[in-house]
Length: 596
Ligand SMILES: [Zn+2]
Image 1: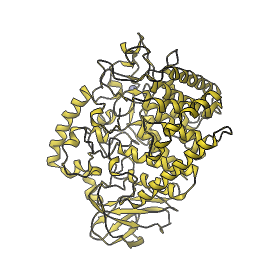
Image 2: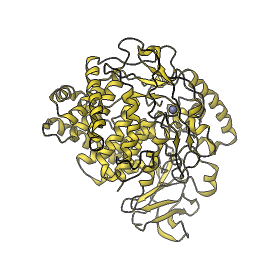
Image 3: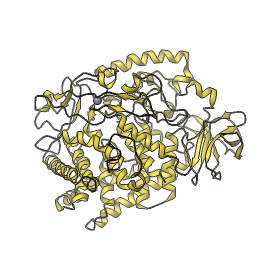
Image 4: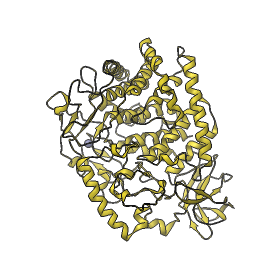
């Protein structure tokens, strides 16, 4: 469970999880007194020995034909780019004058080495400051990161044994969470195993609403960038079965979502234990996995059901060439889910008594219904879905003016974009042009802002909230969608700037994807990693800086930290260092868009 709500009071962490966080937070805050630089600012001690945290590079690298900029937060005037193999200078230049960045408090200088067009591994050397982490200049520099981030989903698989293979020896777990049952709030009784799906975040819960945006985003990545993705093997058990691996991995979660649908078409909200499990390995969490409902008729919830309808409708399009029978099954599920949600448009979810896992409390499911209608229309062309969309879409057009626009609780933009991307001949031309124009106009503003930001990131001061790294990835996705409507290199470059931020070109000089780059974060709020010796499970995106400080670790940081600095690479900081499948999906979309 990860939450990106702005209101701290609406934090979903309750009961045991919060108490655990407080206990851990106390320990780690005590630790800060002894080793502030290593813990508070996310720099491992090796960083001090091997590279200067003042020099910020994308630790994965830069496309050979694109802009190449590193950032420096210590006083200096010149820089050199040296070959990693022998230290020979490949490029040298002058830093820009310093610019003050209010969000970090840093004075930031830029080192532009765009003219360097020889592929290879390099580092920056800055007289009086030191050297940077190594990075690559190459043709398809993000492909392995895409592979690793997609494998991050595989590592989250529930109800099966997992083995990350020879690249990550020892990252394995036996089958987990095989004992499921209906919770008293579901309106049903007895066993309901519902094996499958992905562990949502740092916990072992499975939540329909967050599964909706996450699985939908991955299916879109396939639909939009399939040509680039189809031959990339993810080395998962299904690899080589004739279906592209991104679809194989998404199907793992989709199959679980389908099992959450009741016979009347409605979908239960989540399947979790009553309270969060302790920090144990997946197979050691023996709490029953409960199918949890609203506690009163009709027991299923509208947002969960409409999200299922949307995702299953996309699935009916994208799996058809590979498994027509499965595609027909998903279309049937989507139709039944939509019918249920249309009939029950306002059944919202609150944790029933005795349940303390994540709530994903969305008070308005109109946007989920709109998304479902748009995807069903795009798949079937049927008039009833089209009429529903045309009747309701105008309410959501203004959300496009506030990128990144989409989130787990806000999918109106997904509805509008899929409509405008459908290329169906019966699409309403006025609706399509409104959606395209609003998106492109907002993307121009984001692009300009990103270029002007000292850290070259689209995030604004107000964006350093719970899951800010997911917001950065979301800006990237927004820019890439705008590029589909109006192709512009500036949109793709600005999207990539957000990727550079996530992969190390940030105030902490930290890669926020586990086991990616030379200086990745080390201590995610993630149960499987908490019981693992050494590095955490690979390919997982951290939530990132969060000025909301909703956990004790963040609350213990210095009071005057600027918002982008409110981050702690600690297990106990669930509000800044948890991982979650929705942020992960935005990262994958961004990586897919930046592949060549
Ligand atoms: Zn599990």
